Image 1 (cartoon, rainbow over the protein chains, first blue to last red):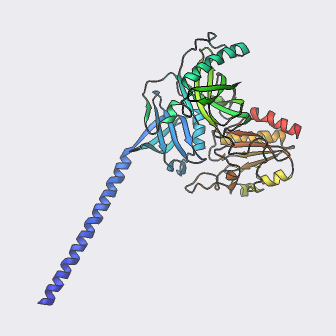
Image 2: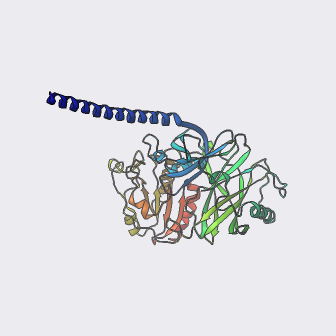
Image 3: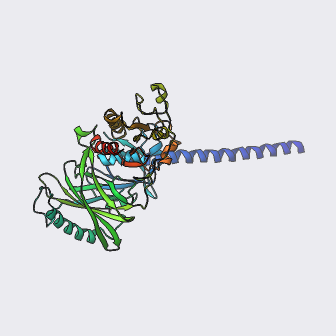
Length: 125
Length: 328
């Protein structure tokens, strides 16, 4: 009888631990999914010409300033993924040439606590 | 890199509308006016006079503020020295490039919170981008002396055909020493990749087909004690704007001067285009390039004779190369 009770308790303890682990894992996965959905939803788009490109080096731009067709100007921090994008890498030098030629661009950006961050910049024409 | 915008307005001193201000007297009058405006509005804002360039991540101006002409300064390596190449581009109120203006420049050294000294004046020359002339693209180039490092400003008098003059003011910084080799300095004896067949060239060159300017390394070219034209660019990555045309410029110069100078093209990235690792060839660091493309003319003694940041045209480079070849 005693042996049966101990086995019962052991099984209950294991089940409880499994339930806890499953619960935590579900919570983490759900949080990640929600976070990804939120960040995907937060991506916005602006189009216009660049009127300023700030950079400290050849590849990554620090900030860009865009003037849209209505005349409004917006400044963006630039994520490193803008320069490393496989399909359309836009380095600081390339963005500067866009600026000089007034070649329009589309900026995809996310709002963050520090302001809008450009995550992709592509040619608009 | 700085930007300035200014409402289109007619300066009180300029009643000539679109007439080009070529006379010294007229220029002097304009300069006095520009100086006053500059002292009042530009000084003290340095190094960030330009309204749009200062804030980050914010809406800087509201929609509807059209009617503005904007000046952008793409140079990234301005330094103390004589006859420095100063680049300027203009963007119109319609967000299109302005290529038909007469541009007068007055350069000021910022000397205090509300003080600036006029140091030099110049007239900009417009050079149309060779591949984009049909759609109207290019830059204005002015040559001037920068005799002191620090905060500077330029007051621009911009006159378009049939329009009244517009004044723009932009601040910028001048470094004590340029990151790239200065004119007169020895060119770095870089060992650059070489190949003779197109297939081998295309292993590291982004141009398609691979170009013919990889037969000599820079150090080999300089060892021959012939003038050298060295282009640092990624033509395959930027085919239609600047780098691609830069290679066309090199090719055209080679056709004219290939028997008297060596020509070398150096790629920027190890695999011909930016990647996640952002690996650049070591030559980029050796030459201190803060941007691309760059074109250098090196004389027969291995010293930098001229350097051009951004897109340079045959029209601009050829006379300078001819001068180097004539003296070399």
